[in-house]
Image (cartoon, rainbow, N blue to C red; front, side):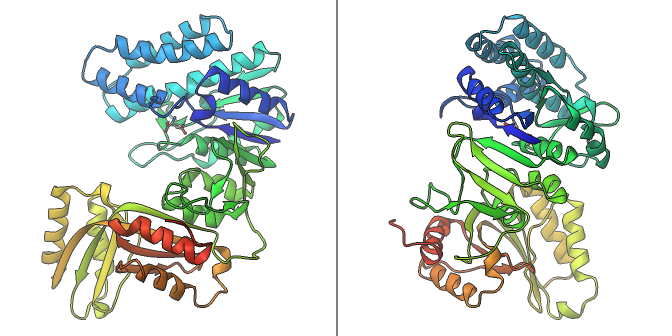
Length: 452
Ligand code: ASP
């Protein structure tokens, strides 16, 4: 059995959904289909999820919502018309949206979640209706039938019992169309995953039914070894391990949601990233293991928006509990950290800048200074992390030196180096303004010389 997931652009219009039907029909093993909400039909279009967030915000502010609601209904109406479905399905969708908008607003986050999820939920109903209308027996299945998630305040994840609950779907005779992006708590409250989270739903389903393959259909032929917007014609990745993909998607590789790897990784279900617009292209396979031949480096990624908290104190290395107390201060502010490179008398904590505000920065600096008696403490912003990834890096000497030399040629200073103990990745912290130049230089060093 194959579980496939179709992303926003793959289900954005009637024409795209017809492609989806052809793909599903062409292999009878494709029995479970997870779908996103309709995404962008062209560059300047707006995703249904964003329209819904807009609608939810207006409802929270008690603003006029009818026009905003109608825009969403019209998107579905255009799809239904193109698929020659009758309008009852659109009435059902309009009714569903009205009900959601009138829902409980006492917790704003949950209210927004419930409206945001309407894109996937209604699209799944519509696609199931379309499959049936063209003679492909299909059934919409709601996440209520087993995709149990945790309660607030933690971010949303599927509870272990979700897998057992969804496992019987493997016996399905019809094609199951399952909405991505959300689940329900034990108390029946809807919660969405992070943006792009339909990938996670597909992965949960693939793990639950122990699929032989999880196909993730998107709008690119494959995953590239570097960002094609920065590097000319980067090498296509045919096969990559979970670990490599995890490291790359951490820093900017957005083709596949980084949280989506976990469920399939645990069971060892391979993933195939494919293109709805070019389904015969082999795509990129994400596998548990691969033979490492050829280049030591598989991909290079970069992501901006990092801040670093630098703390120095003489004899820090002898002070028991210093690190714990420092991280406790961040925990108290609900901040997660990414790296902690350290020396004898200093430590830097690197985190995503979007967690820092003027107020919490001030509080953190004051607490570190006063409670930990630090000699120096500074928060600096505007960093990028450049990540070099490859299973073949482990047995390769001199790789860090080659990378550092290539970076030095751009004139950038390396602010931080971090090599994970798995040795599949090497991370460099640099000032944001050098990011693209460094990416090009590293690509030149490890893949091919690029025209810049
Ligand atoms: N529709 C959601 C989003 O735009 C989830 C997804 O498409 O994966 O983020």
